[in-house]
Image (cartoon, rainbow, N blue to C red; front, side, top):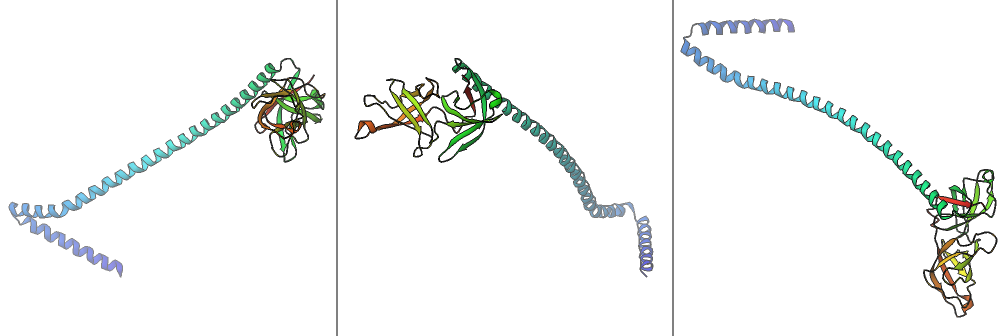
Length: 270
């Protein structure tokens, strides 16, 4: 049924076209020009519309081509960015290694009179009562208990136990630590101990009544006590606490070593 209707419509359209052609053939040129103008007026907007659509399609093709180009450029930039990030990581590793080597060099130069062995801190246990850490050398490297441990800034502590490849070090800020010390200015002897009240600081006591304490004065090891070598910097006087009885006065000492940041140490072998 649908095909029959389509065939009839086609026949009617064909007849109309033939009638128009006969009609146009019987017109004079002037009338034909008029009809052409009418047809042109009708057809031109359609033609312009089709041209516009064509241009839009062409523009869209260009747009999609630009999108593909941008995607390729983006992938290239991502690749370059990844390469730069890798180079940055390698640079940071080299920088860290150079920093460690400089620390070793500074330590070796500063304590050249001692036979020492360099070590890295591999773990820390800084609690309320204990301040100890583990270094990556041990009995196989000749490390023994009671050996002095230092950094490029000053005294760190001493070895309290060893295994084949590691050693445990008790720092001077540990509450169980005691260091025989000397005032750099007056050469008076005193005792420095780790405290629970002032975590990270030392308390200097047993100060002679005749000793003059000066804020900022340096404190170093006296060499007495059988563990620490003489003349190693401990820290500086941060605060002086006077008492009614001169015998009971004490001072707060700020260690030369920042135990939160120290990573490299030397163990004095002899």
